[in-house]
Amino acid sequence: MLFRSQIDYRLFRVNLPDPIPTQSPEKPSVRVLLSLEDGKAPTRFRLFKAGHNETEKGVFTFSEKSQAEVLAAAARWGNDFPIDYCHAMLAAAWANDPSEAGKAAGHFTLAVESGELWATNVQWTPAGRAKVEAKEFRYISPAFDHESDGVICEITNVVYIRALY
Image 1 (cartoon, helix red, strand yellow):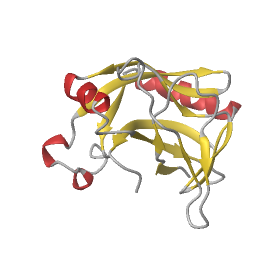
Image 2 (cartoon, helix red, strand yellow):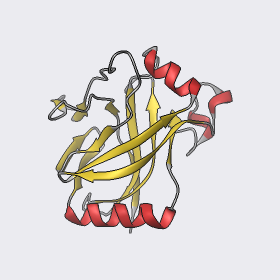
Image 3 (tube, one colour):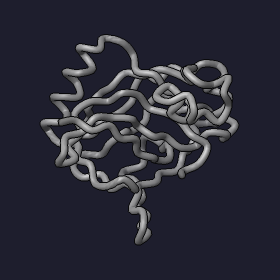
Image 4 (cartoon, helix red, strand yellow):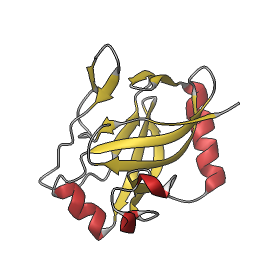
């Protein structure tokens, strides 16, 4: 049985070595601050580090098995993955702005580098780029399928959101 989850992360700069873990008794999470390169939106960002990824929704694992399954699913999909606004592609009711429901802020391809999953070749729409560069949207939240033991097996999309919730 597969499960669908969304995890919230701050966007981060490529050369940052690891997410900065922040713990609270209620919600363990990984939060990484967006750092624009010369004021520009990133063209790549990490989705999952290798191994265990602690989040407010539990611990999810990006393993060697994950690498194979995620890339195989991406090959079957055959298209770029969307970056959407506030998970509104998954549920229009989640849109902060109803006019953004179903719209893409950008698109990307997946790559595994040193055991980590990255969004690469990120192509922002003009509106998406403007919102990132104005720091109106500073966090990402990948939507993905995972097995009951938390092993990540497929990516649906990535959203960017205004705040962690």
